[in-house]
Amino acid sequence: MKTVGVIFQMFIFVLLLAGGGCESMPATAEAPPKADESFDVSIYARYAPVKIDIMPLTELVSVGDDEEGSEINVYVSLLDSSGCQIKTPGVFRFELYEKVERSAEPKGKRIFIWPDIDLTGLSENNGYWRDFLRAYEFNLGFGSLGGQSCILQVTCLCPNGKRLSAEFGLKQAE
Image (cartoon, rainbow, N blue to C red; front, side, top):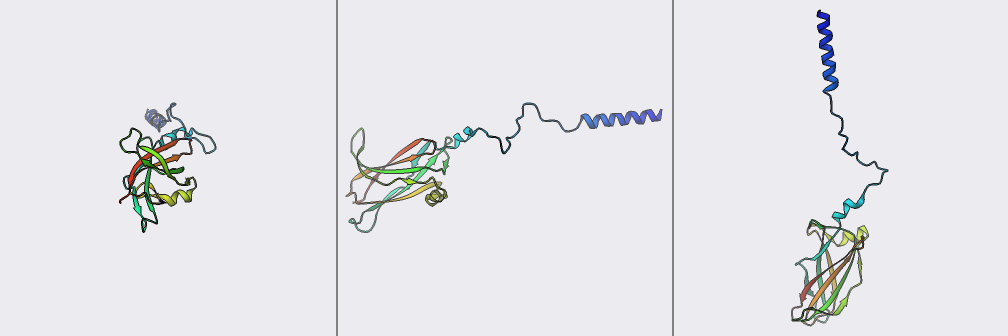
């Protein structure tokens, strides 16, 4: 009888050990993609830029005499779908327009256009990026405005084909 009790206890122990072990993965869980399998890149679309902003730090600075001209220090941030400032490749285009006072369309004729700045390369992108601001810094030189107000327009041509634009009003001190 003692032998039957020991066998019964061993049977219960083996049964508990086999049945009470680690649980297997539920059938609804997906295995992570393997390195050689392609996966859906559309999840990264949420992190692509959807808005461009010219930061209020942007200013018009006189360089030397009025004869020599001016420089615009522009700070541009790109925002993703959740409003976070991001660093991303792109081509930046800057245009300066005269400002038409008391008009429904304040942007007048174009005064100046700078050559496009291509930041699709890693070293070029890093050269303009200011991590402490989470923005890009551009220094754009040009002639004097003669005290007139103007509008700076920045356009970013993104790798996904989107074109993002923003405008900022400037006035040169007389």
